Length: 120
Image 1 (cartoon, rainbow, N blue to C red):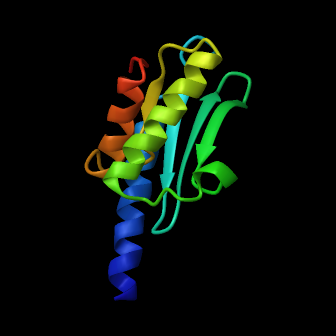
Image 2: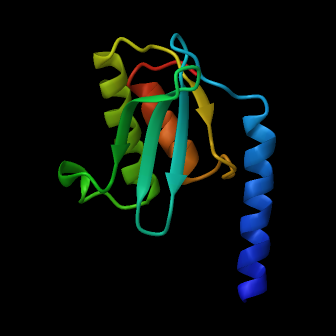
């Protein structure tokens, strides 16, 4: 079982490296990266030129602690991130799925952000 987990993680990291070769964020179009675990979801909007995080949201924040890493709650988190981006006058981002497959929770998070008015 441990070998299977290590192999799955190795494949995700390989996809992550492949994606990051091409995806980079600027001040006009920052990179939106997603991190997920069995208990938490986290989203960061990063300007790679300066190396700064512009906006972030996580289920570890006090007002978002009730959100779980489910499809329904990921869409809510995406909506919250979208609203925070609009408050900072950011209308377009580059989506970095961080090696995760674009399915389920990751897709719901992206859709929630799009519904808030952010373009990818």
